[in-house]
Amino acid sequence: MKEMLQKILAQNRCWIKYGKVANYIPALAKAEPKHLGISIMNIKGQAVTVGDCCVKFTMQSISKPLALIQALLDSGPVEVFRKVGMEPTGDPFNSIVKLETLKPSKPLNPMINAGAITTTSLIKGKDSIERIERLLKLVRTMAGNKNIGINREMYMSEKETADRNRAMAYFMRDTGVLEGDVEEVLDAYFMQCAIEVSCSDIAAIALCLANRGLTIDGREIVPGDIVRVVTTFMVTCGMYNASGEFAIKAGIPAKSGVSGGIMAVVPGKMGIGVYSPALDERGNSIAGVHVLEDLSAWLDLSIF
Ligand code: GLN
Image 1 (cartoon, rainbow, N blue to C red):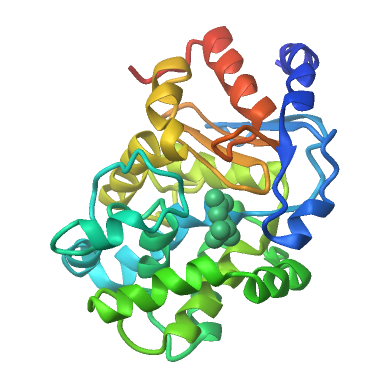
Image 2 (image 1 turned 135 degrees about the vertical axis):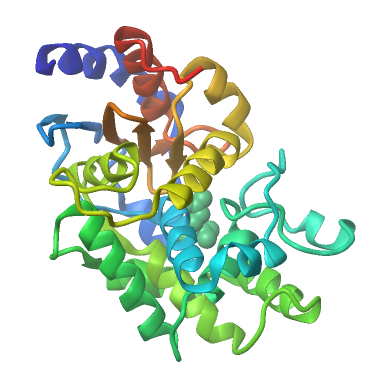
């Protein structure tokens, strides 16, 4: 397995030069574009890692399915889906346009920024610290790593430059989707995006979803019905407006983030974490996407 991963890594390094590290959040621009790491954890909990799999990066949008899990646990599906839809958008992750044009106005799904800010508002807590503590507890338990925390520099960098997310959030308060203190909800959202992990953490979290929400020793962390909802969203909306293409080419439920990480869940088989910060034009890790397509082909991982 390690040898195969090393081959896949070597043959996909060439993609990096066609991508670009995100810079709209200034701290993201500091990433080393050459980094490429892959980590796989199988259903027995055995891990194989190659490349830069120990490099730390922030979750960014990979936090969205996890915030959705916590919101579903805290507020229940009726309340969550009263506020957020279940449909893919075909638009970029930070698009604002459909918030006004769709009637009634609600974000189309929890994997785009507007929907994710809304799910964060549905995590219980009197303030942003309480909300993020609940989410961190879930992330640490799923990853089996109690040292996972928040990268403060990234959190502050996003908070200082988040005019677009702020605009969406205030718009959603106007339409009644978002309730309460908008800045406080945004603060929790910026912190969740800045949760710092490695590929191995991502593989372990993905494995928990692949194992129907159970730890390797059989403890339930996420109820099976919530796992099903979240992995379905990963298929239909997890790779932004490239989700359809990725479903055809790789066929694995996955969620990407602008930091260059991708979390991929192969139900009943394995969890995969990939990291490479150079992104394609839709904001997905360019080498990461190709690595997952190759892995899927080599190991016959498509769920379709
Ligand atoms: N923090 C980023 C943002 O809100 C997350 C987006 C992403 O990873 N696609 O813009």
